[in-house]
Image 1: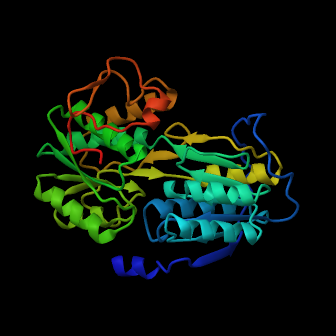
Image 2 (image 1 turned 90 degrees about the vertical axis):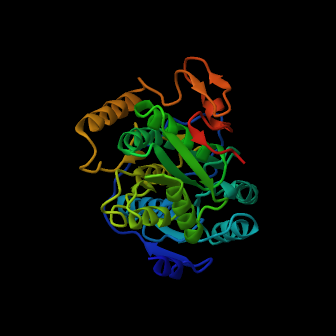
Length: 374
């Protein structure tokens, strides 16, 4: 699989596809009257560009964003034409690619990795009539919005499953970069694990990379050697999941349902779904009502979902997960609520719920996590 995946990874390769399918018009979130509008209603076909940090591949972060792109094409058939550039390095290379897309007449550009934030901002200033949407960042401009999801909601639910199913009481976590989004996921997962298994540990190995299948695999094997019998990850390939399957460990994939790579060991998966959001943004640009405003998805709107639970998961655990999922969707429960203590013994929250700003800046690991933010 790795050879096939890497074979698709030609840097800067562009694939353009003409839209096919039925039109489904979706509404955008309420707009802010103070935000600027880069252009009026679009006449003719809307050109939409996507910049991806890794190869599209067969599963993972970029695969899910590309599935969203394809859903956009289907939903707005005849109204949009999309193109994408995959395996684009963060930094100067990404700025060149984003600028090229703007010069080529793309009126809406999605940049799908945190490291694209400043390059997107610089290009947005050069092309004030183009709408830019950046995934995961915090900087914006009159024609550059940010979008993200509360991925930690799905992580917490998955932690309930991992904690119940682990026999060794050690769960392994292969993590990309020590950014707040990744830290949030580790912490929410650990909170879920220890809710059902109070003595369990979550051991973390940092990659300092998003996509590196060989290192992802090695990290998973290291964690298994340290006693982990459940492996999860925040990395862009299926390598960690495949390593767990080969060694007879259980796994909880991230981004995509990876059951075909781990038919025996996958307990569930935290999956991301971008099609509705991409469609709503494109529809807004088409109609001249797009505004540069932040957007947050999550369990409630289906951006974050759990894949089907493995038949080995006890019925009582399935019911606990179902109830918690409903409570999160309804706003009755928050993963970062109650007493929260970090893994150095410092009380981070005595009671109540962490605020959005505190979550967005999270730079510590909760008790039960073996590792450091570095």
